[in-house]
Image (tube, rainbow, N blue to C red):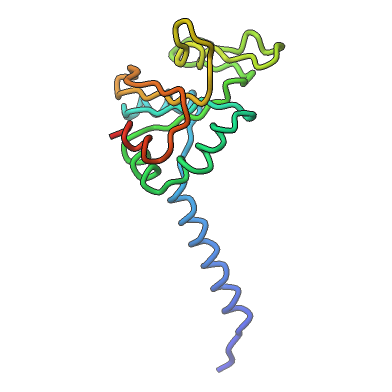
Length: 159
């Protein structure tokens, strides 16, 4: 009987890579767009967490690197929430709930899209990042956070 070590090694390597990729996906959030969220809510109502960010926002990036990589946070959110991530400076038109939203000032510096302005503005305060908005299963805002949230803080808010 002739053994083919190269074929066996290649098979083991491919199996290892596939397992590693599956494991990585299991420990990763499935961020949705607003269009995907609308479809998902139509199928199964669920609580929603929206993370508004901008590429230049260091605290937003820190939340993505740390808070949203925490295994406990990922497991809790995957089980009970739809998660949406939106760049507040997006120039894309977004249709949600039968209405079209856009960034009307996209030609200006740091122009903010209509959706974050509607969902995360505060009276008599300038828009600031990062913003986390939590909605119940009827799509009613139950909390808004205008700050960096570490994993422990975020877990406390989504309990």
